[in-house]
Amino acid sequence: MKKAVLLLAAALVFSAIGANAQEQTEEVFLPDEGEQIEAVKPEVDKMIFNHLSLGVAPLDPSTIVLPNVATTVTPYVQLRLGADWFPSLTWAGVTGSPYTLPSVKFGDNKYDISLDAKLNISAMKFFVDIFPTKRIGFHFTVGMLADVFAGGRLIEAYTTQPFLTNPSDYGTLGINIPEGRIATDKTGNLKVAVKANAVRPYIGIGFGRAVRPDKRVRVTFDMGAFYLGGFRLTVPVQPELAPGVYNEDDAARITKELTSDDLALAGEDYKNFDLIEAGTLPPAVESIVGTLFGLNVPFHAIDGVRKATRWSPYMKLTIYINIF
Image (tube, rainbow, N blue to C red; front, top):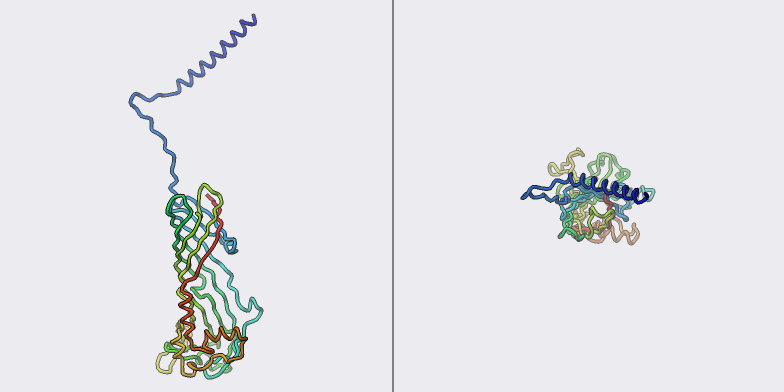
């Protein structure tokens, strides 16, 4: 009796398996004779603006506030956009008081001038990375740094209070140069700036891909140089309308980039006359100021500084995190 029950149960199990197999077999549709089955090709990532990474530089705290952004154009080209931002610090803000420059010749007299200065080194950057192959991290980089914040004025120095003793000299008394006269404005204050190119082309090499879809974290290293065009000393100048006649309207002023020729022709009294009285500054400061402003030499150092600062080196390590 037990054997009969076991045989019946086995028959039912095999019957169910056979029915299920039959149902599965009936759902399979075989192609007709001569018909080809189309193969499904895997989708290829063309990497056309479909990936994004954000980067921070460990030695550049500004990237924490404004992270660099990187994306792909092709497997061979990537774009990066970012900002090298730094607060515009002033001399008085750091030291607590303006700086006094004693015994400066201006016009026919000498004055103690109270100065403050502002540092502007922030700029936007745009890089294009070009990779020789699809996989390696070594790349060539071209791009630019654009000073959209201060127009290339790296340092702006200005008087904090009028140094001319007679208000009637405001806006008129000054130093004559071929293009006009370096004079104070209508409030008796003077402004000077150290300027470079506002747009600075970049060329360099680097290692690492800012964007790699199969990696969450990437590290890149860049080294190259920006073309600054050289540091220039710029001042507001009142154009000469006629011999000995100047426009007193401050709105009509031009910004002049000074050269050694301009300052050598500023007048015979300035050509061989110390603008700053010797011994009034610490020796180290006096040496620097003298070289730049003609304490012991004419003003040829200004042209030398411009030539020596045409290019600025650039190196940065950046950590990128893949977003998508």
